[in-house]
Image 1 (cartoon, one colour):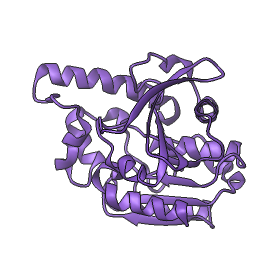
Image 2: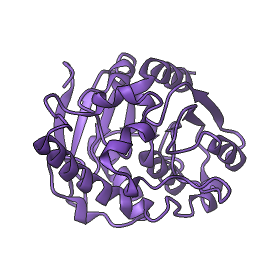
Image 3: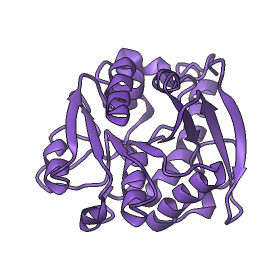
Length: 264
């Protein structure tokens, strides 16, 4: 864990306990992680913490608290997101969602469009284009993940806690247990396809919005940038060099793009 990161647990009005990483000072920025959770180190959050007070909650099923059975569908995820913001004591934050966290953040912005300042969606799930179907992460074997998540698969070790070796039976078993819990949570809004009709609600999204894709993303094809631009004509849609995990593979460029958008 990076120095300066505060670890805490907040309790929502519904009674769910949620783990949160907090770093930095300044305007409040809430980061909702995506499919693979928070990495052992998150350099993009460290960079953002130079300008903002960054809150990074851990979705149910992704942390040490066994609370994954308490959230079942998209509406519950969106309301949980706002419950977390309330529990943090934050008012009108900048929201950033990554991957399936971006789909949730977009839903949050549609449900309570006056309760955020600006919205950034990084490698976002949430839309579906029949002519460009997305690969199924739930049917992916562990050794195939690196090719899907990274433009350069050599970056895969950035996802693994120190000492975890997938070449050993013990390391592989530990990874599978963690991964099954996480995919079980994500599957509630992504399986069999990541389409919960968000497109029907995006007309309600009025906050200034940036949408950022990785040019080498093999999970959410960068061609989806066109679909997001069509759905949100006023959004700033851009592409950075990197794969689905821009937070690990292009953290400097991503942090710069987000800071420029939120400070502008």
